[in-house]
Image (cartoon, rainbow, N blue to C red):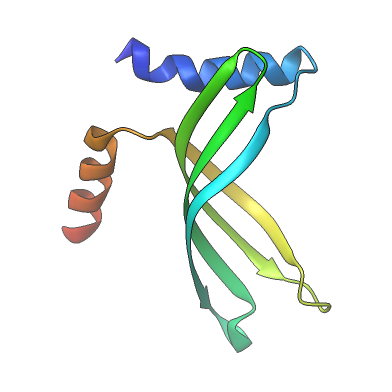
Length: 96
């Protein structure tokens, strides 16, 4: 379990040291919802790269579109991209 948390801790340390990671979106799914479909939920597979290495993670985010149609993010969660976590999330949501 500790090895799975190392990537997330590493990203926090990079941010604290001013070495901001470069993010690459590898795959993304979005669903608009709400009044006039101004809100969205986004599920993505992303990669964060720094000089010290890279980390692949799942991202679940929610937000809205402003009047100009730009995406504005409210909240997001990131998890290390492991088959174990992916399976857990899929099974959990299917049982809700």
